[in-house]
Length: 177
Image (tube, rainbow, N blue to C red; front, top):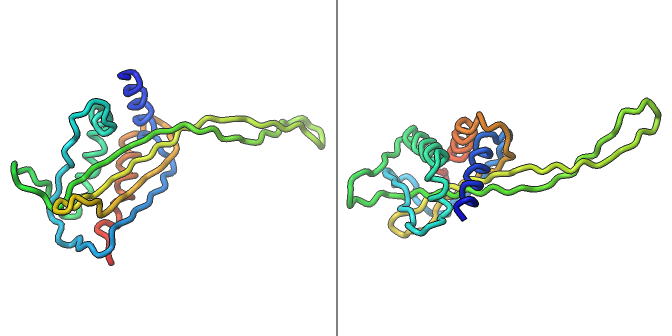
């Protein structure tokens, strides 16, 4: 099982490093007064072994995700609540998933004839998804969700890809009604 977690962490790290084109979506609960939100903190992690967020957070990727989210929120004037026993206005939680899928691509061979043979090449690609939830602390309800989905590419660009995905997700936060 630990090997599976390490494999997942490797795939997620690679995805996060290299999403060349990222599709971002956001949604929020209508009627929420987001203007009253001033402070945040991360949702306490479950101590249960195998929790997906713990697996990611255990590696460098978790720190990149959390750092990117905190930077975006700080830039918007939100403060991380660090005092023990003081409940923030909202909590943050994230999840990540990596899946492999097979795509077919038509190949035409160059043969110098008017009709050249064609074939199909099957390519396996890895696609990653990051989900960020904002949870109202008083009601413990998700009031905003952002998702970023992209194809895994160059691992050397992991930090930039995560920061870009988070910036796109939070670009219009708080939502204007």
